Every structure is written in structure tokens, then in C-alpha cells.
Image (tube, rainbow, N blue to C red; front, side):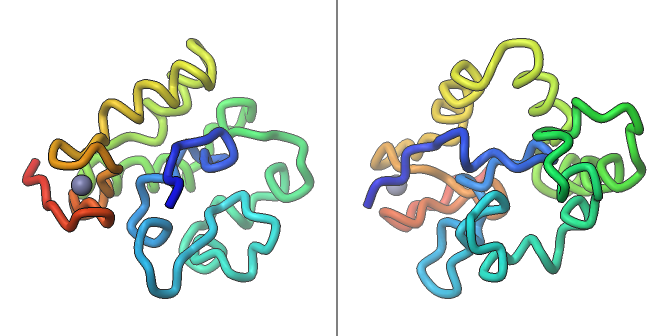
Length: 136
Ligand SMILES: [Zn+2]
């Protein structure tokens, strides 16, 4: 299975869907926040950014393009910094300042499974390819 990280997997909020448990797992697999069929996306239920009008109407592609600096993004960022040792805002700033290609390369290295070279989930440190679990 091709699990290469790609731009299409980077959500408006800065979440990398490619390292999301819901995307990596086999059952009830989420196609990612930017999937054509968002009815199958778990984010539609969980993620409040999805309700953002600017994102829905395609006015902005990423939250960093928005001037509001809204509470939704800050809350999401805080939750992820606390629970999953990553930051949406840090991701967004990286994409904004260094570009998508560099971001994808950085993420590929950061979440590389030390056992098989697959991709670790940021939620539980698990590689769904070889079942290795990284304790970080
Ligand atoms: Zn692995």
C-alpha cells in the first residue's frame, strides 16, 4: 500500500491526515479532511474547522491565510500539543514559511517508523504497516 505523504493530506487546520490514526487504520478508514467524499471523513464530525465558512467556500486553503486567528484553531492546537505532541499552528507556519514540499519531507522523516520505514501515527505512535509502537 502506498502511504506516501502528500499535499492533499494536509488539512486546512495544519493537521497531517497522513499520520492520523483514523486515516492509517484498516477499519472505518477516514479518507482525510480534503477527501472528495467528505461524508466518509471522520473529521466532519470531530473537527470544528470543517464548519468554518471560509474553508467550506474555498476562500482559504489553510488557516494561516485567515485573519481571524479563531478560537477553534487555538483549541485544536492546544489539545494536540497537550495530548499528541504536535502543533497545528507550528505545521501551518512551516507550510507558510518553507512551503509544502519541505513540510512533507520534514513530516516523512519525523514520523518514519524505525522498524520498517512506514508511517507512525501521531495519536498512538503506532505503525500500521508492521505494528511497531514507538514510545515517545
Ligand atoms: Zn513499521
